[in-house]
Image 1 (cartoon, one colour):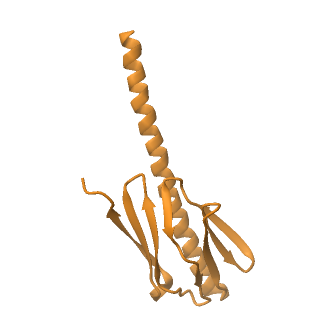
Image 2 (spheres, rainbow, N blue to C red):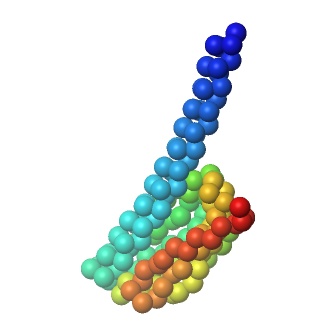
Image 3 (cartoon, rainbow, N blue to C red):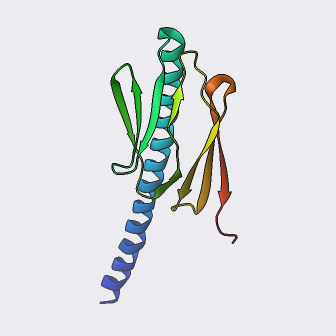
Length: 133
């Protein structure tokens, strides 16, 4: 009985940490996909002189990039809440209207501000702790 109890405790901790690792991977994958799609939209704008509209669809929890009637989507992980992400259009010259998209990372207890910059059409991420430890 004691051995069974010890084994079940070890499995409990292992399963919990494995689940946390999967969530971390999903977050990393989301940010990497978003960056790649953003850069692809900039390249398309500069090479083909075509604008890209970027929307957030709260019903499906995904970002939608629309360019030349072609749609690409990026799914937002469950532990990441989109607080504010107004639609933006990346112009045909690669520039975009500046602004801020706001996310809440429930896994790491952080507020993430995505600061969209007009110069060069890029963005930067600012992370702030939600609760002081």
